[in-house]
Length: 263
Image (cartoon, rainbow, N blue to C red):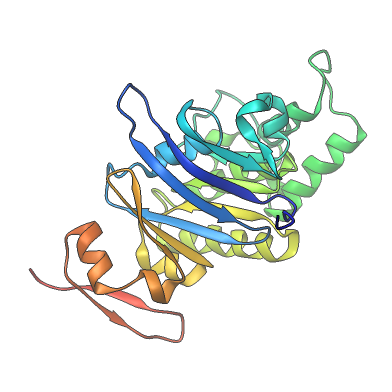
């Protein structure tokens, strides 16, 4: 048997959803340490549901998820959170909470239930997460007072404070203008390189996905339609099948650009 890499995420025939009929069916892929996989698909294709199944926020009906070689569904949620963090789309913001307080919540999986204050290591991890996301100077600001890009960086800092090595991000660029979209994606790319983080990211923008990802996955009706390198996945035929649009693909210095064509 091939030796598992640290923090490798493996899905084997994963199925599940919110009711008796699975939304996700037979999804299989492997994510090695320090790699970025972006999931693309039309609205309602199951992208967000897949992230919730991977993180065990939803129960699966079939298949397995392995995290660092161990079945995730046999691990307590607290133990999972020490290895894997999920950043949902438009996460709720507790009223009156500061940036520092929010990021400190990332240490919860590493503390016993009776600990009210961060220990020395916890404070160190929170400070490092704030520094890595360029939020140290804003640590005492209320989350509600931040810009959209700053808020996204704050929630990313929370995930980093967990010391998780696998991050699941559901539309981290939603509602952000192009400047902040690039800021968040550049930050994730930097963290992937410097911290060897493994990323599973749901995006809508195909061109940004092609620019930053190591691999792409196309989802259609709850199943993986295509999985592989950008060149293998981003073809006019695949995009027509998944998005029902005709496209032309242009080569640029920053990677392929998908141009929708008139119908």
